[in-house]
Image 1 (cartoon, rainbow, N blue to C red):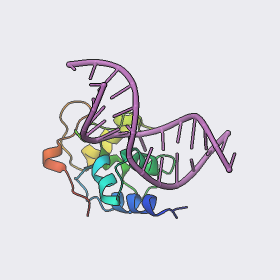
Image 2 (tube, chains in turn blue, orange, red):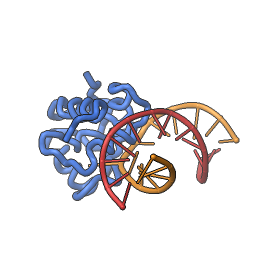
Image 3 (spheres, protein in one colour):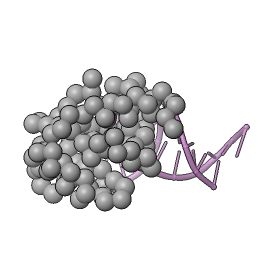
Image 4 (spheres, chains in turn green, blue, yellow):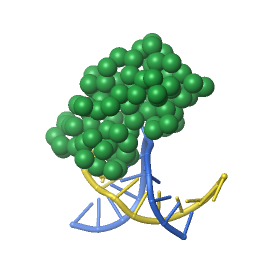
Length: 103
DNA sequence: AAAGTGACGCATT
DNA sequence: TAATGCGCCACTT
């Protein structure tokens, strides 16, 4: 159901996030050509495409999306830990070690 | 067809 | 320091 360019770019970009890395909504938004970070989250929301590792997308300070669908930040955290991502606190990842620049 | 809604981020008040 | 506004896209009602 992907046809709109921005959504396509967003999802395609998220799919490319390597295991053990995370990126931010803002970074992706900027990468696809918009300042609207909400668009990034919205592109993933309701789709939950298994090909898309949405759990590797966090807020700019490394915090997980509080409105993450279904499992919430806890489920997201589990998957990140499985990826080898180091956490700082309950819902914040170590961005300086795992940040991935969209490309 | 128009307005409302939605996983954020940054600037301004 | 906290609160609010704008940014600006696609989708739903």
